[in-house]
Length: 130
Image (cartoon, rainbow, N blue to C red; front, side, top):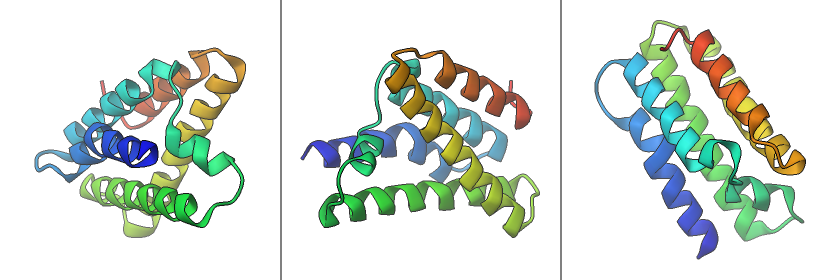
């Protein structure tokens, strides 16, 4: 139930904005704001990441994989909507999700939200979002 709740919160915070219509830049901006909220600006761990880092578990691993693949797919589609080619959009989507997840892990391990906040600021700037 805890993992399901985490998936629902991720859906509302990060994935739903990517599904919505409108300009892709606004969808990206809304996703990043949702991610910041979901992680409590780097002070809260992502339960999907916690489960992914734990011992192998067929049930949890499948749920985590599906959510992350969905996030990457939605993000790649949104990046394509900005004009990127399919291959480059997928590469960037994987990179962005990797950086966000990695920064969340680092913030948790160091008990310091700064790495997470810095990554979100850099991503925002790299995407040309303000």
